[in-house]
Length: 108
Image (cartoon, rainbow, N blue to C red; front, side, top):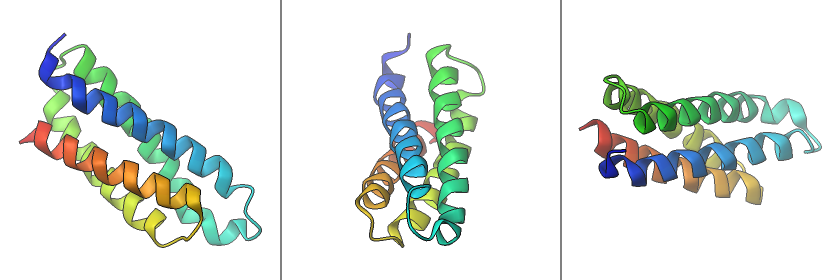
């Protein structure tokens, strides 16, 4: 496997787990309706991050192009999560930002 992908793969997997945890925790919040956008973006971001990691692991010719798209969803998810004060949202926002930066570097 291409070692240049290693850091980005790790960030993507870390972000996917943070997003899954955030979505599950959001479903336990008192006002779940208020968290709807957060939950939707968490789920999209987790799926995108897992697929980006998979494409990099198999050295797909689409990996860099997909990383650019993954960075977009990570930024959108991070922005949404950062609006909420819950610890799980703040943790997720940080993971999303780190992943977006890593994916942007990979896509460059």
